[in-house]
Amino acid sequence: MDLFRSRIVMRAAAASALLLLLVIAPAAVDGAERLEGFDLQARNIAERCVGEIIDQFELLLTGGHLTMAQLFDTFYIPVPGTDPQKFHTQYDQLTDGILRPILDKYLDMDSRFIFVVAVDRNG
Image 1 (cartoon, one colour):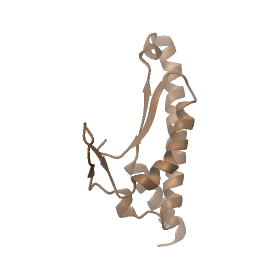
Image 2: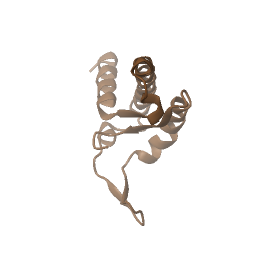
Image 3: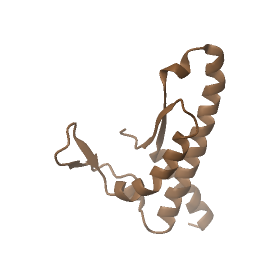
Image 4: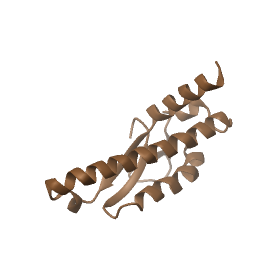
């Protein structure tokens, strides 16, 4: 597979592994006329954030720091002594350090955002 085609496959794979959530404060949804503008702004911010995260996943994949199997890892390892139970995967320690600054940057873009998270297809 040529480099261009493999980049497209990796970008699609990274995008399908990622769900980005922007959680918005309840006060941000009071008026219908304000909601449309803010919804558009939030969506645009989320799309830019997803793009940055996908770029980082591509770098990890092409640099050999992360495999496709790790990116789609669904073997959740329980973290001892957590209640509610928390889990980790083969890749979360690697990606946490890379994703956290990106997520924090986008969280800071609007005071109505409560948190910004990237989760896998299982939440």
